[in-house]
Length: 78
Image (tube, rainbow, N blue to C red; front, side):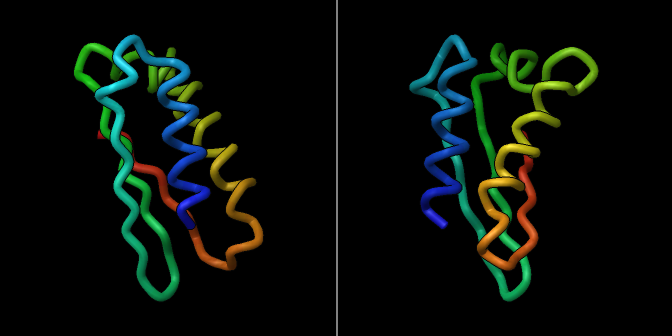
């Protein structure tokens, strides 16, 4: 599970202007894992992208990376 957290952190740090302000909080229960991505307010547009395309791509990569864990993975961008 920490691999998912590190993967999301690495992706976010690669696309923002303030990589030191990127944090990921992992919350897990019986059936799901929630990754909360927090970035600087001025970087929010870069993470979401035009029409949410970057956010969708990030969610797709994390979903593919979590295929073997057997739990539903949600990515929240805050």
